[in-house]
Length: 151
Image (cartoon, rainbow, N blue to C red; front, side):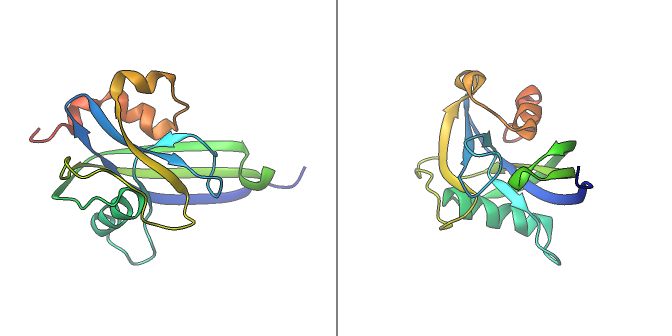
C-alpha cells in the first residue's frame, strides 16, 4: 500500500437559514465525493481572510451576496482512508461556520464554471434526511438553532 498523503484544509462555510429551508450545494463530478450535499463554502486561499473567503465562496457557489456574516462554530473532520483519485490519504478538514444572511428573493445559481459545485438550492430541513450529506452539513443540522439570523 502506498503511504498516506497527509493533507489539511481550512474552509469557510455559509449557513444560510430561511424559515425551515437551508441553502445547500451539491458536489460536482470535479469534486469529492461526487453528488454529496454540503454547505456553500470552501477553501480559504493563502493570505485570504476567512471572512472574505466565506463571502467569495457563497457568491461563486450560489450567486448570492452576504448581507451579514457572523462566525458561529468550528467543525473538523479527520479521515484516513481512500480519498480523491482512489489514493490513500490522511485528511484533516477544519471548517469555520458562519451564520449568513442573504436576499432570499434571489434564486440561487452556481456562478463558478467548472468548479466543485454543480447545483445550489433551498431545501426544507426535513427533506435533507434523505440526502447524502458531508459531515459538516450533518454537524450544522444538529445545531441549526445556533445559526438562525439574529441569534
